[in-house]
Amino acid sequence: MTITDRLIAPDATGEEIALGYTAAVLGALTAGLLAWDASLSPVVTVVVALVGFDLFGGAVVNATASAKQWYHRSGRSSRHHLGFVAAHIQPFVLALMVPGFGWWTASAIYAIVFLAAVAVVLSPRRIRTPVAFAGAVFGVAVTSVLLEVPGFLLWFGPVLLIKLLLAHLLPQPDPLVLPQR
Image (cartoon, rainbow, N blue to C red; front, side, top):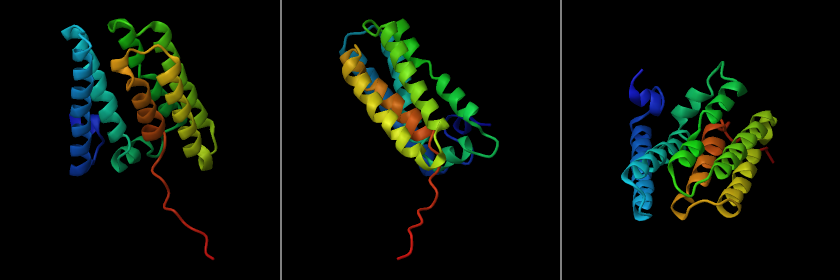
């Protein structure tokens, strides 16, 4: 398995690969420049840039047909999906490295994302999409307004929610079949 197979998906198309890497690089640049502009140390700036690479790139990659097919292939269960969500410990990495991004904020963001993910995977399939969107929009409100997040990291909670709830947890949609009149 190649690095692209791991970062994007096996059998990803050229367009999916280009989109994924472009979003990841632009995310790293955006996050890194915001951190640099906030006068953070070079080490912290690199950490924030790496988080940006993963989250911005992952939000785009997880929305591709190839990633949907890979992550929702036969034999994948709710446990696999929740394990993927649980493995996203970036809030705690930021709490460890970034001044002003506290452990309470990290714990709250992690809990919001994980509890919303549990709600999605426990929902009947027919309403998983609206449940995921409900978790995302309310999570964006909380992570953007109610938690103490440094201004240069205000993107973090919303992008994490998009990557995990909307892009990763939702399977490829079934073709829309409209009722006959």
